[in-house]
Image 1 (cartoon, rainbow, N blue to C red):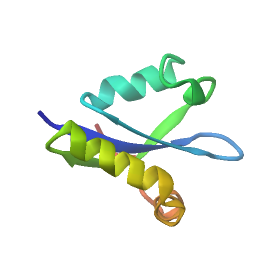
Image 2 (tube, rainbow, N blue to C red):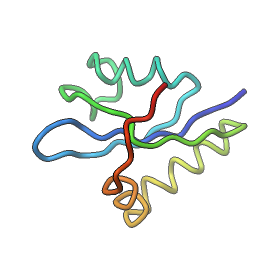
Image 3 (cartoon, helix red, strand yellow):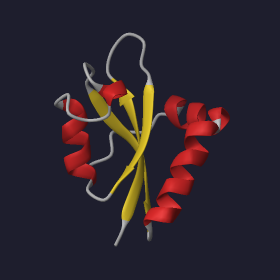
Image 4 (cartoon, rainbow, N blue to C red):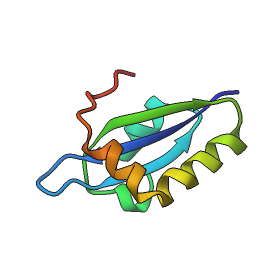
Length: 87
């Protein structure tokens, strides 16, 4: 089964990012945008700016942790001109 590691960017004056993993990317983003996702994401609207596909949950969790804790990589992804990724 495939898992996705993803990064969301909030829409607003001072955007923030959120990194997570999931099996169902469309459903997960919908939950974030409907205030039913992670507590940190509630009250904001989000757009998907990055995703990676992994073959196992273990790989996805490892990669999520790596991206969350690598501020240089996270800022690079956030600041690049990624177009919104079509789901």
